[in-house]
Length: 113
Image (cartoon, rainbow, N blue to C red):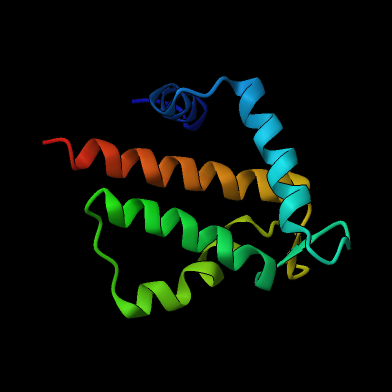
């Protein structure tokens, strides 16, 4: 079975991004998402990103309940906010983006059959 790192490498390959490109995307995404320029991403700033990923997954045929849509950002925050301070620093935001990539590629894989 694959390690998380290997899974993520495969996921990046599937969407045609190098690790360096992904790191650049994280930096650019973090800067764009940090609307109030606080140096951290709060739940309000993360929500549109989570919604974008879910919209892309929905286009691939993934179905979400209203409950899942409503709680998605909270769930992501729970998983990636390592220090539980209610905001994401760039490393935690990178983890959130990794989750997004993995969710997207697992949808791509499961809907190909």
